[in-house]
Amino acid sequence: MKIKTFLIFAFFFNTLLLKAQEEKGKVWVTVDDLAILPTLNPKGELTSSSAAFQKIVNQFDITNVVLAFPASKSKELRKVYEIQCNCNQAVLSAAFENTVVGLRKPQEAPVYELMYSPNDYSVLIANDYALNLINAKGAWDITHGSASIIIGISDANFDTTSTE
Image 1 (cartoon, rainbow, N blue to C red):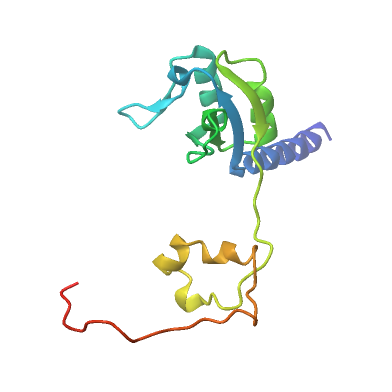
Image 2 (cartoon, helix red, strand yellow):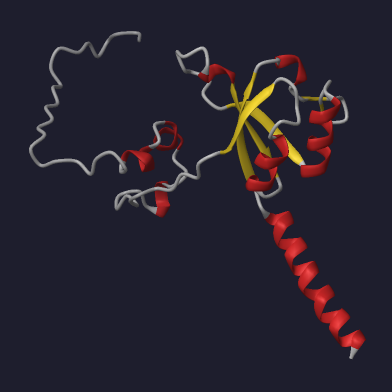
């Protein structure tokens, strides 16, 4: 009976452990000291000059650190970094709370989902570079278009002999 109970417990524990390893988490933190941010070493591993930050990098399998709002005009938002890991983001966020000097305001990054799926973004053009570049799928969250919009195309006044 004890062995059976142990085996059931071990099975569920391993299942939970494997599920936790599959998770991809993202946490936003405000970084006041850029020197502590991890960088890739020659072996391709993230290393930080802060022992406390390095401990979290190792413990939570942090995979990347990027600016969350690189084009922001706000000086404060340009200090916000997204820390990506193969872990539970709630647990990672809690781990950053008051443990690393130079980091503040850890919070779970939002998870974005498309509100609509475009009806004209077919399998034939799903990997179209230009459509992906302008985020054509994401545009459907803003508008589906309107019959009241008129588009005019003019093919006059162009030079067919131009070198451009």
